[in-house]
Image (cartoon, rainbow, N blue to C red; front, side, top):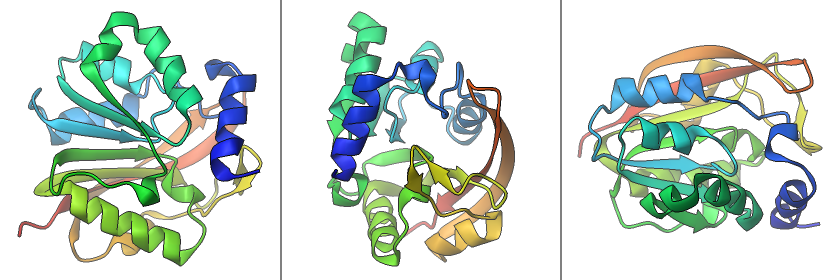
Length: 206
């Protein structure tokens, strides 16, 4: 099964709150976005947003320039149905992030909770970083979260790459100034714990 086929199957066969990554509120992500970019007109991209409720909370917080990307159209349809007419306030993009092409320097905040750790080859990761550099404005911010070094070795049956704060930032390199990192203990709907690391950076000014 292709990667896209895998995720389409997941979202067609499971409710959005029956997957391990479900959060009633993406508090860590929302707090970091508000901290880094309080401007409600800022263009915020949620990469791998799928059926996440982060976009609901961003809308409720007054942000007006939002995009949500996911490889699965089924995942985005879940969120669109949940939002109802409010879905018209969001740009919806069905694409694999490493094949994504956006207008140059069009994003103020790039947010990714748990996509990057599925990129298990250096070729994939290098392309991801190139996409981020093309998409995010100089001076803009990048928030990337993955499983921590003591997190799961697989997710949804797929292998993942685990990171410390240092090793995650090393994947991005000098064009990204590390501003800080946070650990999160995510409690899954099944009552288990998953440890995440969040790194947040500023893209070097041109």
